[in-house]
Length: 480
Image 1 (cartoon, rainbow, N blue to C red):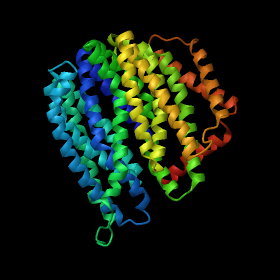
Image 2 (image 1 turned 90 degrees about the vertical axis):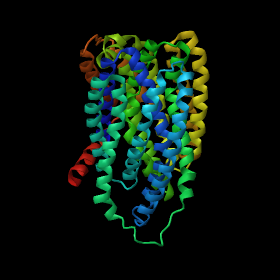
Image 3 (image 1 turned 30 degrees about the vertical axis):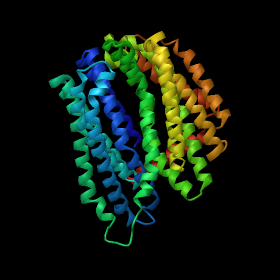
Image 4 (image 1 turned 180 degrees about the horizontal axis):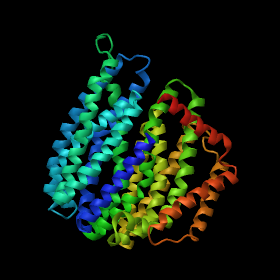
């Protein structure tokens, strides 16, 4: 799953790099607005019910396998109803959205993008279905398939039909992935979970009661991390600045995408441990996952900030180098949001689904207020500052709630201080390896190695960690 998620993230940046180079910065800004909005809407119809389904499937697929097709069927019906409602609302709302952004030419493009919604929604439905029944290998295979298809199809369609081709590619890719998932489920998986037992039933209200806070959390979170782009467009009214900022925002999300697989796996795992009242297992899962995330997240953030300019140039080309200062600020905000997102999945897995929802809502409004003021004062740098401040606030509040309500002392502050010290030393060491070209990739690899050597010297990483990793790979090899 982690390998597939990394490959998927790389494919995403290949697509963005291709789009940025094949389109003008002005069209790339419009591309970012349309695709980001579509993904935001997909969040409404693509995650809430499937995540709810995944939670209950993870609890029952071993103890009561007969419930699997029942839960899946009811979740699918709710999903299809929601798809129809949201598509209708989005169609009639497109002129209002274009008017709010001050660009009436966006209306026909937004209406074409409506067809992205059902494709991604049904694709995501199967993604979480396989998560719930712990078919992680096939889930990873689907992710790899989507990676390959979106590089070949989306870039190919952009080359042929420019901005309209990009939208068409985002429709075609999830459709093909869905067909592959459906075939595997129909011919193999569904036969393992017989549905002939008519005495088994599952209250669909349980799905909805868990789904609606998750859905609202996803909506508020997507708005929170995308709001700055729309404020840049609405306040500055400059397609070039919008395109430049979109490139910084896209690159800054690298840490979030790298750890997405961890969040997906954590939710059913935490759900299972908390449903069994296994507090020791819950604490172990949370503590180890957070330690691993922070340990690997810190050098990524530091190196992205140090090498922001060559990184932007490598992905998008020299015409986007103006995004580097915004990226240096945004990458810290996105790092905080990555940890917040993980803690939100932990709380959701434990059944505390409304806490992440309210926190994300607060963060969304805080980000909106800060953007309104700071963009007028500082332009796109103000947007980056607003998002980063909002990220710190909601992470601290979520961390405090998790520690108080769910698990105490799940973060070892001595361990955190050693990782921070190694990161500070990494930052100063990076000035010995300045790079204005592709050498930054070599220096980044070398500095990352030195960072982990420092952690070993500081006794943060131990032979036990290496032994655990070795045993993990040996286990996977035996399973294969």
